[in-house]
Length: 148
Image (cartoon, rainbow, N blue to C red; front, side):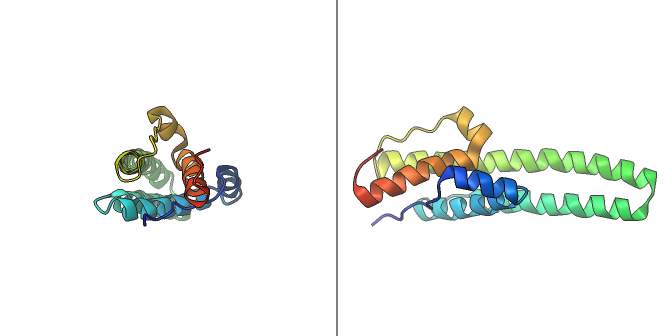
C-alpha cells in the first residue's frame, strides 16, 4: 500500500539537467519532494525548495534590473546582493535535501524496512541524482520483489 518513488534513470536526469541548464533538476527535485511528502507528511522539503527557487528568481530580477540600468554602481550593488542570495539558495537547498534524506532513510528503515543507507557526502554533492539512483532501485524492488 505504500507509494512507489518517482522512476527515471539518474543518467537521463543528469542529461536533461545539462540540456535545460539545471531546470529539469530543479523540477525533478520538487517531484522527489512531493514523493517524500507522501511517505512523510511532516516533511518541510517542498517549502524549503520553494524558498530556494524564490531566491533564484529574485537573484535574476536583481541582476536584470542592474543590467538594464547600465550603471556601474548598480551593477556592483546587484553583484553583492546576488552573491548573498547565492549563499541563501545553497544553504536552503542543502537543508531541504538533508530533510528529504532524513525522511527517506526513516521510511525505508521502519515502514518499509529494506535497510536503506544514504551517504551524507553523496547526498551533499549529488542530492537529486543520488536520490534518483536509489528511487529507481526501490521502484524496481516494488515491481519485481527483488532488491538489486
